[in-house]
Image 1 (cartoon, one colour):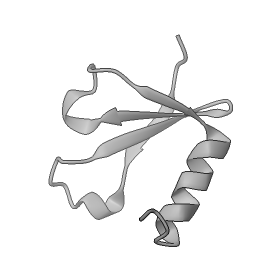
Image 2 (cartoon, helix red, strand yellow):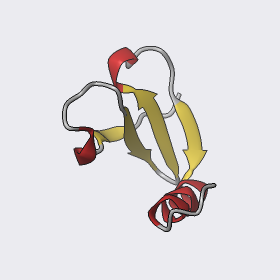
Image 3 (cartoon, rainbow, N blue to C red):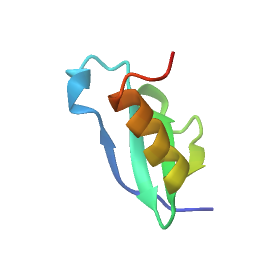
Image 4 (cartoon, rainbow, N blue to C red):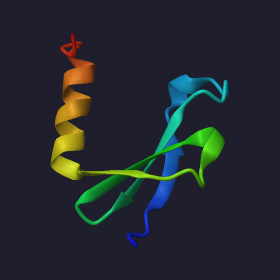
Length: 62
């Protein structure tokens, strides 16, 4: 099992609780529900995650 470190949530969440957290591992990003941290972790490659973030920042998802 991959151990992710440095779990953090978006500062834009404003403490509302309806958000996800990301954690880091070599070459991977883990994504989990803040309200259900034991419910599982979605694991994606760092390159794919960075591409996704780029598209979000450029507002190109739609």
